Image (cartoon, rainbow, N blue to C red):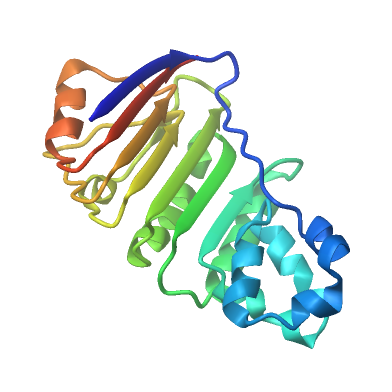
Length: 212
């Protein structure tokens, strides 16, 4: 297992993703729309956020409801008030029909009132056997970090985890039987917790700690 420790000035994860507009301009809308559903879903999965995938529903009847089968859900509260962001995510999750998620990602400014919503979303992802879970929590008050529910520590569906700005406080042994990659930033860790993580992740290949 590879254990990496690094320092970064800005802990927020930045990932390059394909823009749908660029795809359409390059290939032409008609050509893209004629692709098989599995390929269209792959294209939608590569859009920056789920709201962009939803926006493609206005292109044509073919696209109208395609997004509800996308296996990757990516949400960010950038430039949105909390109530509007919560409403959007909750509505989106009720409309999704995909039973097996490859990826679930949330980037959010956290305050003490957001905890139950976040844990509900995580439960949703776990029920759909999510493989990759990314939680990027930017804390309004560093004294009130997001506390993950206990069910999170016994979910065998995870293969990749990214945890930023969370609080890990498992009551018992961690059981991440299929976890291969764990990326941790701005999370308090002690020796016992690290040992618990390693013992409960038998196939873990990469464990990365990032200091802000």
